[in-house]
Amino acid sequence: MEKNGVNRNKAPQNAVSYFLVELIFIIVFCMARCDSSMSIPIDFSDINPDLDLESRSFIASLNGENVVPPIETTARATLNLTCFRSGSEGWGEGWDITCEFFVKNIKQEEITGFDIHQGMPGVNGNVLAFLDKAPSVIIEYYMGDLRIYAQLDHTKRNGLNQATTSQIVEEIEKGGTYADIHTIKHPSGEIRGQIVPRMY
Image (cartoon, rainbow, N blue to C red; front, top):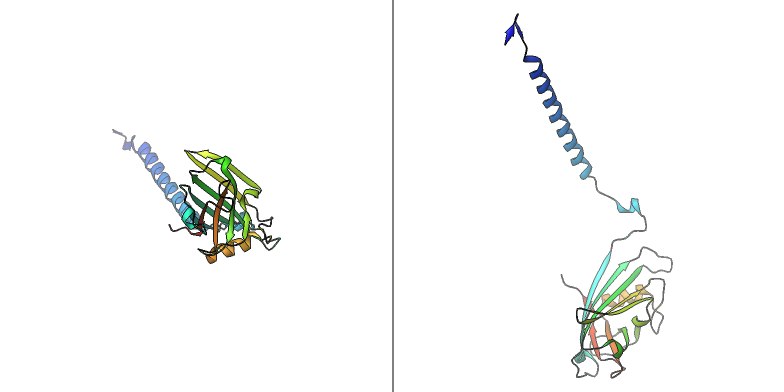
């Protein structure tokens, strides 16, 4: 309604329009800022210079047929082995190694040891790491299977030749290592499996 040539609705309409324009500008500005910030790559070394995300995964299938000489047994196991670069090079090291076995048809009380050996398929070799003597070992039952977890610390030396974890990883990558589990019935090893890269 107009009185004396003045539109009383004009001022509120102008205020609403101005508010909407401001709101749209703020939204566009914020989206642009978010886009630009997300396009900036994050350098984790700025957060922790010692952080190294590199890891390598391996697997082994253990059975009696792989033992030298072969053994008749129903026991089986799968080993998941992961190498994590520690970022510490104080000893010329740099790898922590975690080993997780899932074992069938062997009871906890029957096990006398579990190791990583140096050796190609069909050949027996020296122990690179006595996993049962690792700094961290857990043996438990998990969903009907026996779970064995062991972690090798990069600050410790292992096996008969006092190998570093870097030397162990080097041998694993060559394909010349195997894991085995020793039992009371088979003290030299009841099941064995070659350690190979995990295929995803």
